[in-house]
Length: 446
Length: 179
Image 1 (tube, rainbow over the protein chains, first blue to last red):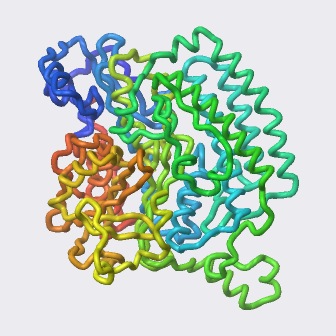
Image 2 (cartoon, rainbow over the protein chains, first blue to last red; image 1 turned 135 degrees about the horizontal axis):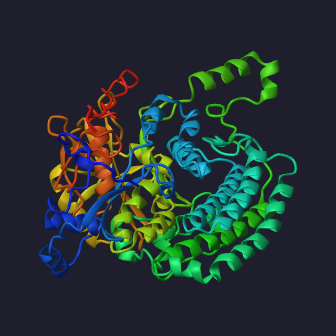
Image 3 (cartoon, rainbow over the protein chains, first blue to last red; image 1 turned 120 degrees about the vertical axis):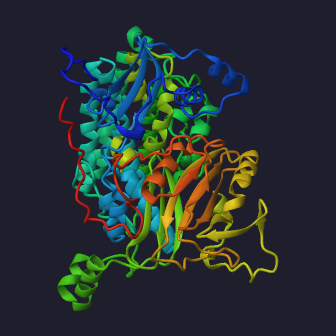
């Protein structure tokens, strides 16, 4: 947060300006502008509009203050411009872009095989999902079907990733609200989950594991033990969370009734994922528009009823249980077979063939230098990431690189709900609200 | 998914080959890899959005742009649609019918303006700003059309195909002297 200078600077001082992105001060802002920024961007009824326009402009007791980009509870580099009256947030404007590295542009320079390396770095808390969305879109453009085993491996791995992502949320949410022991516990369990992901993919994060045509490698020997270890460990630990948080009056006080949103507002704002489900809106792409083999597994979609911070927290905790259900079914139903498609156009030849066949070597070289060509066309494929609908839109011009690669990051859209959620609350509640939206700034800025 | 019924490889479906083109909201339906695509004339876009909103497409899930500068002959373009340099792609979702719909709107480079969807779908606020930032497409009626990802004083629109990536020096604002 900004601090005030002790001594007034000598000489004439110009007003500092951050350009057009800045939140204008209340004296300058018109009624309509205040209304828009306050209610986020929602359409209000005509009477509400009339009421708000007639509302007196707040006098100079209001204060514009920056929260972030370095504030610890902004989960990275999110900057919120807040207009405060005392402790109450009147308006809020999220300012993003601090982590923008032009990944969509980079995606146009990389081949389809290199693509997952790039997109996996967007949502760094659940990297496998972005890889999956990208791969599914490329496969849609190629009109290929990956083998059954690859489908189930993808399901297993993404659900594991969902668990780790939600555990990370548990940790950071706890930390933001001062439940520091929760941070340590959440971090500890997340590390266990990441250990399994590391056993399979070789990396804790940014796996580059799910690729067009299948996955990078088969599950290693002993993967079942790794899964079982987690499935045995987690229920007990989650039970501890329940005791530690759900039954704790301070925790409930800090979250219940804070940052409420309705289903209509979520739909208007394009908000998806746990925030939408917390309002009682029963929508999960895994069930409602199934991809992979989610129509063959049995799980529940958890919904809340109040649309407040507590519901969003409780939904994520419950979704860990649901993901464990899916993981258990993956364990039982994991089919035998190939882990990637045996399509010579897309798949590099197996390592053993390279030693004995010149053609295989050339083929291998060409696939990794030139890449494979994808027929002209465009497609949009969406999956349910831990944060909401994660979509990937690719336009192909028939070459081996995407002509246009766009990722619809759920965090980018969800962050639009912040001004609405924060209006009228306290600054301290604002911290809880940012945390409950669970934005990953890598995905917001891309 | 609504596109499950669609035959694969229908991206090349030619409207004139079909005796009676399938119409959806008064526009011929194109299918791209089983996904329903409507090519919307720029002038009809606001009216169509209103129709779609009433028909249950309550959420604009994604809005983005494409610069077709070096790939002008794109696929599956109906005969009566004049290809332009820019295209705005809008993905909508109908939760009740579990259907998705994609709109592709041609935006000419000489006049890169499109009416904003903000009034009906406030969630497009950030997406339209991003498209403006990256492509320089102006959304008429957008309440706050400023750069969202790039720095405030950046010159150019990075996702345009004629934008020379990798050769632009990193721009920093000089710190004001007397502070």
